[in-house]
Image 1 (cartoon, rainbow, N blue to C red):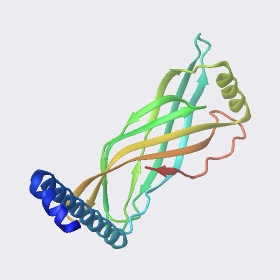
Image 2: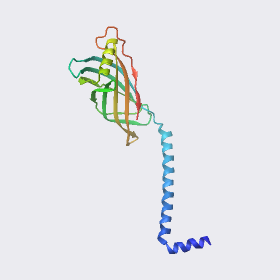
Image 3: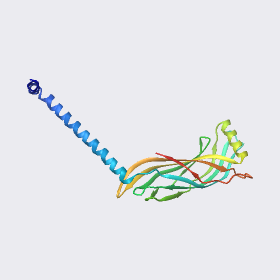
Image 4: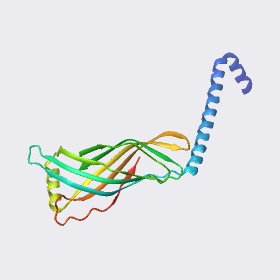
Length: 208
């Protein structure tokens, strides 16, 4: 009885039955594609085992870092550093595009340095040397007082960031990758400080 009713319904509304059939077919195809994509993703993951890039600031020099007497106060700075960026992956090469370095004090950006794009092969390391120099308004009485206190103490806390858009190379294929963000909190000897502690190589934090 139920089968006969469905047949009669289809005879009355053939377009409705056709739409239901197409919808059911599309759902089946979609589920099959999702399962296939999931299996393929797992295979690629276990085949290549992608690892996070790593970065270290090997050396840094703060030749100038002082506030002017102008109003508003200007931060006069000269900061250079050498950083090593490592690709630990055995089967994945990385292109770094749109590379830029930023320097910040107390959350305020005072320096910007565009860097050349570069490529890293399997398990390769690249040295980058951002340099910052010039002057920039340093806003806020609390921030200015914090800088004067750090200068008097012989060490200055600065954050250097490195941003880049990645492209991933697998065999002969190149595909867009995530945007890499590298953050390096540095404790630097203050310029002309008598007994300032020497700079120590610093590991950076990396996320995508």
